[in-house]
Image (cartoon, rainbow, N blue to C red):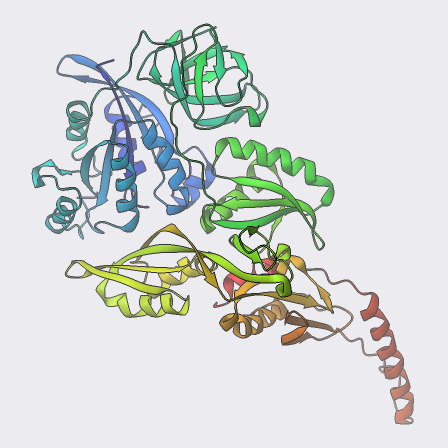
Length: 598
């Protein structure tokens, strides 16, 4: 056990984690040059196309150091704020972390939040200055930033480059020398924590775990604490580039178990595995349940595919346990699911994965957050409102609260003005502003969660030319003047397009949405009014003109009344059609709200 090291790689998005992980795999000979490809651990097509890590990946490496053989378990984690749950789970399975900072960009918001996460779990931090080969690298400045942040010596910061392989040996030596060996009692009853799981259509569910105490052997009868169910360990092993079966996984090690589980609900990430014959006393304190930030409805395009969609979502939830969903129905779209995501990118990725991995074409509704409504007759008890259509009658309501966040933006000082303007426009209140260096500023403000759901992140990137990095944590609920805005098409309310908005923004937003929908909804044989309304009061209207056929083409010459007669006849037909006509809404229209400023 003294020769095992468990560590993960944490950094802001695009600071070179996966590239450095590739070099570590090559240097330790875990992967041959023939099998080598960029982002070797990222096995999803989506990850390669976008160049981001979505899932954290565990892999075991063997390393010779001063005549001894070491086992290094590495977990490569995502850098985007939307996948921070993956990072928290990886951190719970490790004793050390490589903190990677890009030498050209310096410390970003996500670097700090991931670092705090690691420090909470008492991990040993090894700071690494990556991308030293870039012409724009600023090693001295960025080293000072790292020293200020974690209070280490400048000599402790390892200069490296994932591209050229500079400093990889030093990193491996530091992992062996600085990261403590796992603690645990090999003689105690088995106690192992599940930190990830995947679904394999031939083998069932494969759970990845980290053994805290005791050991697990092939053929053992094991029990999962959370569900209380018992299984046979058909195959256990360690995670190399492929699954590598072994007879036993010992204390401190990271491995996988296949026990023929077919039901997604039976495996919960954070659960504890123990043996039936000699069970441990208590479950391991895992990580807290995930708190979704953005809610959106996902509906099958064809209502008959509802069960198929449920099956696909359960499979996907195994692989991504931060996805939360429950059934709901909508008057406009039929049966579907109300899903909770960690952010907008997370929502986009889930939708894309449903299409690619399960061939499910889905419709997503406008994302929103959950609110709390208090009624006059019972002002003590809050009603949770996840969907604008669930909002109680305004006359019976005392007040409504919305979730607030504390947001940190780190940016160059040139863009402070534009970023403040954007935050104030989104009803944010500035609470703090700190100059980290001469031209890097950290701005902290409190703002409603609902305002960042739509297009905040995209606009932040554009006003700061991509230089601002953003991170946030929820700070509770505050009272707010919110009203429900409905959208009517041809006089009929479309519940999937309703939104809860602040009273001061309602008129402006209503007008913008109507204009946008006018562009996106195709013209019909009859005229369609698009209206935004608050209660019974219409606050904005646009009209989609009817397609007209030239019925007077066959009338040439003669009296004007002949033409007028034909036009009147057509007009009556259009009127009748409008009463029975149904408007087909394209998928883009449901997400129109997100692109109002384009």
